[in-house]
Length: 284
Image 1 (cartoon, rainbow, N blue to C red):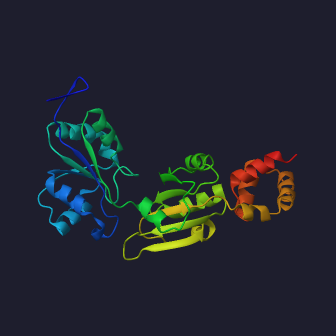
Image 2 (cartoon, helix red, strand yellow):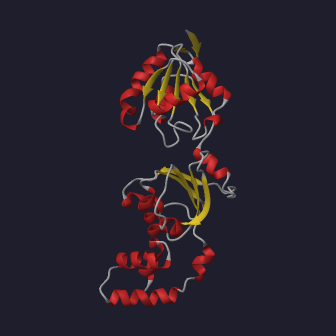
Image 3 (cartoon, rainbow, N blue to C red):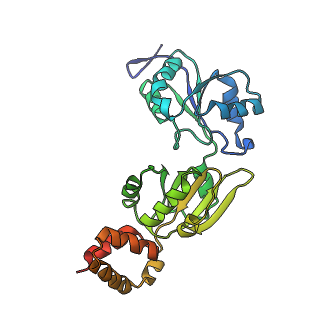
């Protein structure tokens, strides 16, 4: 036992937060391999995928503890007990850095509360990897949203309340990206965007495009990181607002409601539905 700030601190194990490759196994660090070889307990988002890394680098026999989203809360206390008994534990996600849109934040927070030492073992993240090859000037910063909610109404609430002058980044799965892109186009209007797909893998794709063009694509394979740029002010200035105003009056005469008109014209002119909704409300 050691005295510190008049409190007795227990000797506990250490919680290592270890970043893994996001595709290419060679992207793991020497330090990460040293830690993974030294610990007995490894907490994995996906034990099956982690076994591939064990075999590739001959890490030896390990006690793997499954730690995906649905069991995170249930297993956190058990892991704290292991640490408090003096055992070191490594936390890894399926790929990339734990705690960034992956399970682990609750475990890390509780470790601090229980006076357990947390040690970062940094490495690859799809977020920083995509930003580094995008060519975007980040002097003013950016916004990271991770995975958007699945419901369109929840997506809309988040997206319409973002700062207007910063790029934002989302992660998305291939089976959901088409629907998400259509929602982004309707809510935000057409925007320039940077697609980073299958980062560090054989079929890696890095592409500057627009939400409109991307939403017309039929197939996406592999995990996706998407950077969406702020609204193009020059493009917005070119829009004939008087023409839109005339169309609004015509649609109102047909009995359409403001939300319906905004949605219809947003799709036609590749503008933000919120922008058009606010514009229509101001028309007297």
